[in-house]
Length: 382
Image (cartoon, rainbow, N blue to C red; front, top):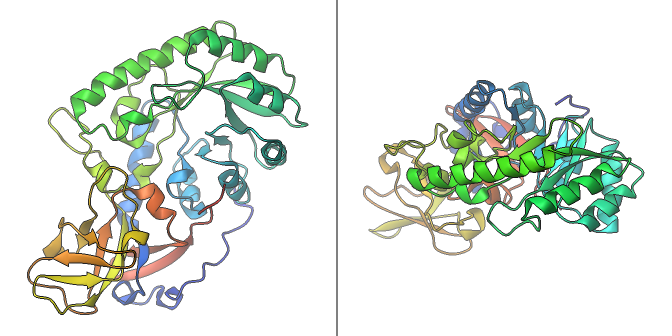
């Protein structure tokens, strides 16, 4: 990412703690942390894994929404980025001219005007379509745009369910002078949290065959090679061996969470090769009970999609213990010995992507220090 600018300063009561020894323990809470050494390890490991396959790595920025992280991913050889919305694309276009792919369809006239403006800010803008009206709206733009046909991979999320439909859409795209047929999006997101290895292996093979069939059908009329974009952190070990996928959209690998920690990456049940770097820091504000303490982080600070509970990452004597939000603003930790009033604990959230969207900033920690504060600049945009 060739930065044109840097993120604006993030208002934070913790700014005065940057680079102060012991600053990690003094943080005003609740706040969102990223453990820098673990995070860097995840970034480097993913880049190495993909490099060995020859596939393009196009991480999905919806996971972290943070320009500083995107810059580090770019330095680790990301070939471009995926975003979930026009708003996310507009945020990241401010910081560089790296190719962007918007992975959800755009439909309204106002959205089309924003697409046209974006196409002039980045080196390549790619959008997805699943019906002819999408294509016709794009064809009327005074802008050159690359297009992926969004294939339904079993979730009912795309209208393109048959190979003949995809071929018809491809012909319409190829007939528009301002549109480039870039390929297909074959995102099988249902594989991400299919925890059992053998179930996921079977479904991943079926998805790869389906993507390959669509790719062959559209490729038979295309003028050149086609991209096939998809993949996810939870299915990463299968994505690497995919015969169809050319571009990998992994996103959550950089931060990880409790739910991804439950995914079996090997037949003998080993976890994914990424570690949880994201934590919510919360502090004990009531310690008057013999069985539990109350902290200052509740439901407003944790996103939960599949029912997993937040897990304690530190202090070590509570490592792996369940943390329970008990109201909007309060959480509960049971155990012995009890934490002291004012003591801080760090908790791994159940689901990282929407948890990030609950905060304005990532507090970057290394050892006992707060080393930086990163703006979650694309939080809440659309």
